[in-house]
Length: 409
Length: 225
Image (tube, rainbow over all chains, first blue to last red; front, top):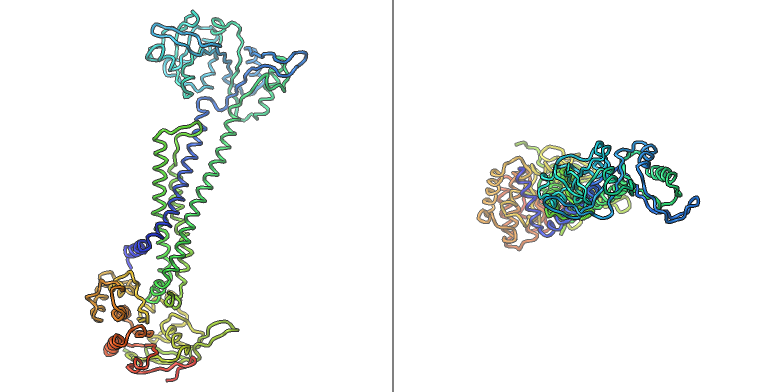
């Protein structure tokens, strides 16, 4: 029998039992479709989580000054804690590997800012140069704040893209122009972009020392931010920070309200671990569904072999070898599994691509995708699984006794 | 051609079941069939004639003895070798025709040839030739459901002949047919015999057996000619 004739015979057999073939094929189709869909969604969830952190350095530590909630060494509760530039030096000394350390002082009310072409209300932040690293700002025109700006208390400003657009129309035109904050002129030296959304793109950054010189002479601030080594143990880091700041500001180190510490790296790792678990679960469920589909192929092929017992018996009587019978059944299982599995793969990829192109995004979900390796692995799994699914019924068919089979009704 | 028998059985024993419920189906059968002989095997139900035919057709094994088919021992053949031997040396005709309902008459006849090295064109040519021999070339593309019982059996005979076997085994070939059609089929067997075919036929019907060249009687697992 030629190769083409063999496959023609297999196709005819599958076609003769259309309903059974379709039901079997659906099992595999659904299995691979679900596997691809779940893998794609898993990737979307992973990217969603990553995007939550993409506008901030994942190894940043945010220390926020609060109000004491415990009495300590004669001090009553309810005392406001504020940071000063001396705290920066203390933290730098206490935490090994702390870099890009910066205060962040937000002027309580967004000030009216005007220029020759526009005005508006914008959040104004006093910072050190390292802050752009932490916020992952991207300079699109000009430059960011530098150490000389801090040292010389230069009256310069860096605008978010949106604020530059509102004030100057074209952000590129903002460079070299002046903005006026509470009657004081600041020269625009840079415009930045950010993935954090509208609120971050409306910001105006000033050198912290310039802001203290002009708009808020207190030189105090409520938020201290720095980047640290990922190797530092989170509990140790928080405890060390509390100890240092508690000594400097006389509060109980166990007073969680006096100072709050947000370790982005710790949160990132926790969420990453959670999604690793979810992805593992998704993969197990997907593979389980695929396995169930392949088991159904095996089951249906067993029924098929039983139904075709007389035919198989006759083929053996007229000269078919057990091996040729075994191959016949295995090829049929392989054909059903491969075609339906491939269809499931293509439809699954199409659904994932449609979701991706539709721009469906949520806080925890974006850009679902199934990578080529996973798709190839799924295809190999189908071919391997399909062959395996056909093996047991094929061996049963090969063992068919022609005498019994020809008596079979 | 040699003068040696096409089939030679020497003291064949065959039992079914375990030690407790052992059934002796064949109890020392010895038989020789010469090339071109038309032999009818008769016997009451349970006498062992079907077991004998299964062994002759290499569809079943035996416990002891020796079976030579065309001077070659079939003892100890693997399943693959047994299949090849059946395909090359033997043609089967069954009581219930055993045609595949989803194949045409031509495809049914060509079925044994699909397990040979012949190409599709050669297979179809030989199958059509056999259909013409049994007078059904005009029905080549009909399915079994579109043929009468007698026509189905003629297709089955064409299928048995298509590999040009050394011997044809027929198991109650007229058992499912009316007397008129039985006569047609027997005439066809006689024509084959006249052309030199070796035929071994199991039958209950004495009028059918009488038309054979030799009658072999099987009783209690023994041959008593």
